[in-house]
Image: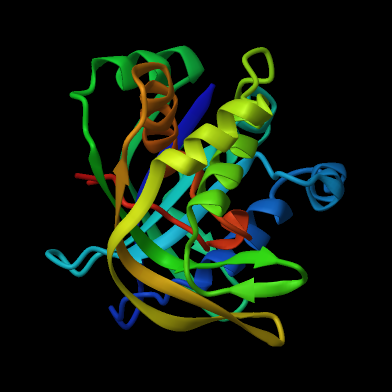
Length: 245
């Protein structure tokens, strides 16, 4: 089960918040729950939380989105987020207003994927700084293989009873997907004492897949706005915008 919360955030001066404040908000969340959960999250590979901070271009509101990807995370962090109206950070106080609360799960995402039109071109919008890591280095341009690997790992975290782990199927998926257009720019995401090389913008992925594999790809596309892609999605990176086509 995925539980999503969206809040508008405002500070006293009214200025929009930068996306890297997602790291501070994640630290604040951890301070609100028993320390053992923070220790567990630091030890896990795929963290069952994704969250990000973005500015809505139309309203200029700062929107904080939190997605709790497992029942355990929902049971731990939902009490922190329910009824939230104020966040006290070390340097400032933020006013929070709930914009959306929703839930979904693996079966519903699968049904959504099956009901989609057969989209052979998919636009993915990287709303916050996104990066992958390959051979110990940050990669600042997406590749089909990395997109698939990242989303499959997140799906397997969400639905371990229905894992995507067939090597032959993934080889066929990778062969049948191609990035055919992009509008990207490089950015740096400040995190502690490091500025991570990354990118934001859009890509268009063309698929030439048979129906069963196309359904898997569409499932991963439906999943992406909830989990994000790439590294450090818990700390605000890799957010995928909801409007994909």
